[in-house]
Structure formats: C-alpha cells, structure tokens
Image (cartoon, rainbow, N blue to C red; front, side, top):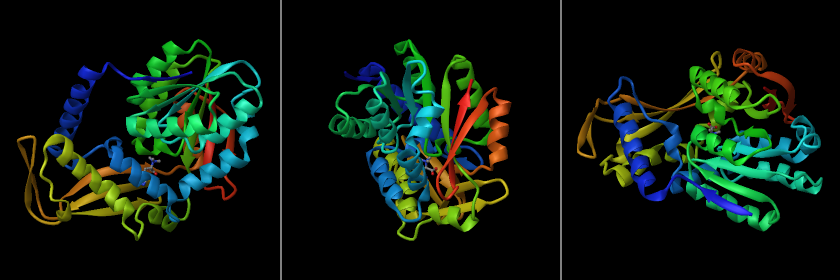
Length: 327
Ligand code: AVJ
C-alpha cells in the first residue's frame, strides 16, 4: 500500500539539472539578481529547515502544530471527512509532521482514504515514508516527487474520489501576490465542485516577531540561504565563495512581505557551468519572500480566484490560520 511516483528516472535527472541551471543563470543575469527558494531543499537544505522549525524564534510550525494537535476534529469536520469519501493530497508535505495528527485521527474514525504527499525533495519524502511506516503502517500512501502542478495532475489521474488538498506551513507565502493568484486560479480550474482546499496562512503580527523568525541569532536561516550557493557549487559546477556573501532579512509590516537577500561583500566574479556572473560590492540576490496576510487579504485572495471560504481555524495565539476553501 505504498508507492513512489516520479518521472522516469534517466531523462528526469538530466531535465532537472538543466532546469535548475537555466533558472539559476536567468535569475543571476537579471536586474535585480534573484534565485528561487524552491531550490533551497536538497538534503542539506532539508536538514537546515528541520533545524529552523525547531528554533525558538520560528513560531510558524508550532502554531500550526497547535491547530493540528488540538483542533483535529474541527479540521476533520471542515474537510467533511465523515461525509463523502475522499483522497488527501498534500502540497509541499515535507516530513508531514503536522498532517500526521490528521492522518491518525482520520484512521481512528475509520475513514477510507489514500494520502498523496507531493514534495520537490525526494530526500524528505523518504523521511516522511519512514515516519509514516512506523506510526501509521495501515494507511495507503502514494509519494509524489516533483513540482506542485505536475504532481497534482498526476494525483488527479490516480484518484477517482473527491479531493481534499492540504497546503500547509505558509508555503503559499513563498509566492508573490501575482503568483499566489495565478496558483489559486489554476488550482480552482483543476478541482471539482465537491473538492476542498485547506491553506495555511501566517498572519501579520508584531513586526519584530516576524523579523526574528527569519533572522535568528544562531545563523541557521543565514546558512539555509547560503546553502543554495553551495548547492549551485555542488550540482552546477559553480565556484561561489560562501564567505563573500552575507544574509540580510527585511520585513515590511504594511505589505506583509518578509524578504531574504544575500549581499555580495565585494566586487567579484563567479563561474557557474562556464558562465561568468559579476557581482558589485553590496549588490544583493533576492532569495525568498515569506508573505504575511491579514484576514481581509486572505478573503480577497479567495474571492478573486473563485473560491468560497467555509471555515477558519486559528492557533491559540491567533498568529496562524488554516483557512478552508470550497470550489
Ligand atoms: C517552508 C516556506 C513555510 O517561508 O516560513 C523558513 C521557509 N524560510 N525560514 C517560510 C523558510 C526561512 C518557510 N516555508
């Protein structure tokens, strides 16, 4: 009852490297320079992100864990678990630490479903697989390794039941406002009218609380960003000198954009797969956005993209919400 699905191996590994190289070169040849945070998650990146989730400053995971631990039956009711049968698809499942509480609850109440976690990191999916085999050996699982939409389309062909989509952790915050709208519209078009989406949003709060979560004193978030340069060195034959770059975090409490940058500490040239990229001293690479939302911004996003909000589950601090959307 467990299966791993990805594109056929031989062609896909080369395609992934080509795609990665192309994105990196395009991003670093643009003004301003940028890299995509979706590439943070190789094995080292996965390990650093697990360390981030354990940091005292990084409240997001604890808040959403509070929801999944203590409001599990509210979630089950929100996704109408006891109504018609469904399959559960999770976008960016990671190690599935939070969703495991829901999975446990669903199997306890005798729900028949297949769990389909999607993640770009094959490494974290094998961690997830190990955890679930130990904790919930009876559950049907289809591991889907790849990008959100490619694998969502695959999941649609594998499942003949109603769909419940989990998109947790504030992962939607890694998209720009435009990208988030496009994403939600595409999701709406893919789904059927009985399907439900549960999306996690990190709420706007004291700006220091947000800023500290992404600029920890121990330097783990800095290492998480710098690891992408190391990954480029490893996988794309780059020669970044990591010590010549410094992490910088900013938070704009009006727009809710928490942004990560890497600053070039000197004039330098970096070689990536034979291409030279020039950096000026103090030039930055735009690395990641982690968008924070107000409730009215969430409402606008749902309305603009066709969804109807049918519920909202907040943590006890009211810092994070899982919003339930119907097609
Ligand atoms: C995994 C996207 C939810 O944006 O909060 C953590 C990634 N980046 N610290 C986030 C992240 C820096 C995280 N998400």
